[in-house]
Length: 604
Ligand code: ATP
Image (cartoon, rainbow, N blue to C red):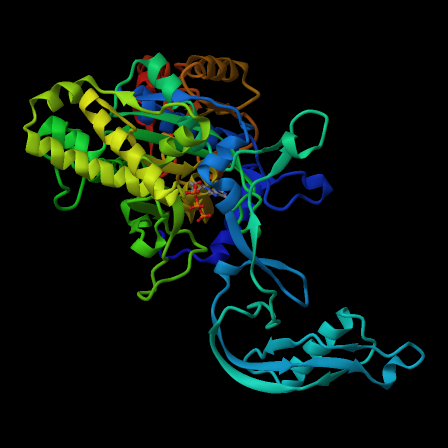
């Protein structure tokens, strides 16, 4: 299914989303607002089901993860501690002709002949006006198959934008350029030099718009978890290793929102911060640190797991999650970031990619995939930063460590202390702490291990709800053929959502709407199922048309109440209905009394 998809398919998906009310532009009646999307009835349920399932597997089914629901606007110091105020920026460039803005790191490298001009001066066409000159150089990369005049015309347009009426170009020269990202891939014009642009949305708290009242809409949900770490650990009586998870809105003033909802300015995240013991602590308690071996899930968590095993565990758990909601393993890519791509504090990051129809193709012609989620091993960086900025301790007391430490021989104590000291010192030095102070503090922290105290490390699986919803929509979209009322095959669009996350689970149809006995029975069935799942009742039009509508909505099951249900063909079929499967289109006869259990089993 995945291979045959193209951008043409993407267009059909976007149009289906609008037609069926899955997703459409925010503020549409005013022409929309770039980077913001609304979810209609079906989309809202799809998203809710995704979030509910995530919440279920991440916390309800586990003893070691608890939930949090924090505010969107938080103390601005949080973003200083996290580094967002200074480093959460993308390089942006503007086209010198169209003024269109791009992310510099997303410009495709191009090769060809560049036309350089040193400036321009007004010619006779500017008569009557005061002739101008412009000494600003301009360049243009000639698109393949175009004549040199094309580049000159573009340059003239540029100088016209600079106020010249009849630009005569000066200092023309050409150059062969290779893999340059200085030119606009859409029109060949030179781009501005990259400038850094902070992606956080700024606002003011209270009526006075002054510097001290500046606040930010959170660009991620994670930081609230770190900031509230101590409180949540205490009230939930959790001990490391344990996690805190949160689902909520995040905002990024993306330079170039694109690919439908994939890169939006307002979106939702599902994030887990799973706090673990530093490897030195694991070694003190368990006598050693397990190393990942081979591929696949490492199994049930063990006391001798250090960050590598925990990281692998969460990558595999997250991949399993995507498969459980219907994304085939072949549609996902497990991308290990290269050392040069890693954030400075990260020890390893795996991006889980989905092969979207709009993804670029790799060397083998396969869709390369775009990020759905990042699973990062972030060391103790985040909690240490909040400890430093807030002046509040982020250490935990670990009884097992204290007991184990007392039993270690001196050599082991010294070795573990030295390693821990070195890691802490390295962190403090990176934060510009003077060497002497860093050393003193790291020594104190390493000595505290003996008392069972340390700052936990963290593994962070961080996923986007909207990107996942889009992946599920792309994956579900399917065109096949189904017979119409007269048995003639016609094109059918069917959304093959996994029943687990399908917006509507079952549609209930009375065969005819003008037969009160059928309608009454159908309403009874609807009311029987309603408390258990999302039910759609539809009595409008021919039954085939009603099936088709539900196929497009991705409803996995259809229940039809007919004359057999009323017992008109004999007692044996009384109170039975036909149950239609969306994907196979097969119909089976099922007792009404057995429907709830049967459907619940299939949508679990
Ligand atoms: P990208 O490199 O694509 O901008 P990122 O690496 O900055 O993403 P993270 O900061 O790791 O993303 O955020 C975690 C998750 O949040 C992403 O994997 C993605 O699913 C989601 N996300 C991030 N930015 C956006 C956005 N602008 N629109 C929709 N979802 C987003």
